[in-house]
Length: 285
Image (cartoon, rainbow, N blue to C red; front, top):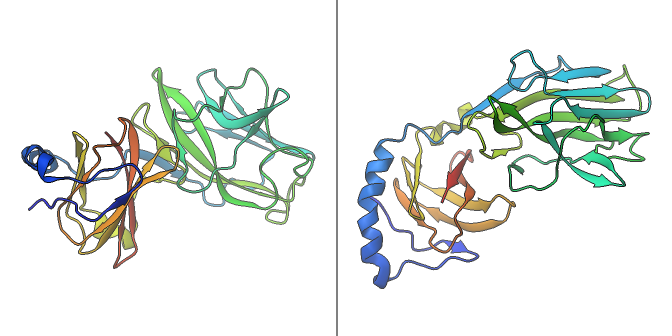
């Protein structure tokens, strides 16, 4: 049975009241039917794990979709670590100072999407990740398992992705991890024009199987969730990273009301309180 939320906390939301309860209940039948047609709650993320195969390379060509045409090139010498998009329809999240571009360092779960305005294409020049042991640049020693936000094009449509990178004691080559850099994995969202979270691999580990059967449907500002564990915390994030709702449910099937939120893309995070496993799902309201 669908359960109406009664105890969540939020920033801009209003609770369901008797005046709108009848209208809300009329939507639950549609939500129930929609849930039945959902296969799972996982995104369509294509992930490549490099492990330790690409460590301390002077040059590295990043082919995000593995089609033998690299979208980005990395270059390191004794003074700097640089990166460049290879095409005008590829770009990197960064900042610009005096016409120089410095790629940003993203933490795990940072949203990578069209909500950011600081996208930079190549224009024929490399972008500076680290110059002279971070005299300039954001990728300073030590930077361990952080993320480069990027987008590129497949068949004329934009896809967002990330590369996982570590940097130690630049300049320097041949002595990683005492010095040098490593790219250990990358991923992209297979659905065009869809946000991806930094570090999202699109898979659930053994410890996450409690949420593996969870189904999520968003319809008319209601978010219906089914096949939940006995106790589940939830949080809803805007693409800016701001938490706009949070709460807890002990129900197998649950509905979160989001009437006051603006239309757009959000990230729903579910946490099983027994196993501590976490599932994140992009939804559109």
